[in-house]
Image (tube, rainbow, N blue to C red):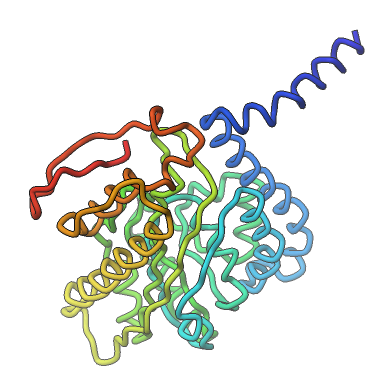
Length: 324
């Protein structure tokens, strides 16, 4: 019986490289398994260390030191721009776009630059043990999005502490992660907090993941991401009446940076076909470039297996190709 089990185990081991190279669905789940598995394993190891200084945001530096190596294992590369804004020893509210759980890997790679930084996360993540327990011991702020009044009380208490201790608070103002090639409407919470304590907003923009990640088609391949930190936006002298204007100004800056850095990343792929200048328009440019670039052809599923839908650009009236 044991010999059969050994043969079966050997067969599985021999099949892994074959499946990894030929099946994009297997590769997608295998990479996320590595990602979540290593983070969970590191959480178990780090919990005893975190207990020596519970709920201290400096614990996240230990976590990032252990977890950022996952990046190389799944083939991602992060490039940080605007480091001088991120490394300042100041209290601020960081607002960043949210495309995937892979955003956390990007954060792990720049945590040593941010130094004292914590994150606002949904309460449900706390129950994803061991990660949730380790995250709480590392100082993450969990809020109950269903009970709005309780969430506001939690954030108000946190807001006073981050200003006093010069902590950076990372918020995803879109709320839900969506890899759609564009920034979605922002919620006002982060901007309320910044104005309440008169601390700056620090916009951080991740370039599009469209060249290497497609959750609907279960594709995750090697990719490069630019993380851009924009200059801080002051809130001094602003009141609650200025929130809408402040939020739209910050979002507009982030949208423009998202378009530019995403287009730059896409241009690093040698194109099969030229892209008409008339279609270079935000998220549609991202979709068009992905569809026409060898970068997408290299997604190990082959050009014939890649699926796209055709649609018309309302601005240029040009035919566009978009990854499903």
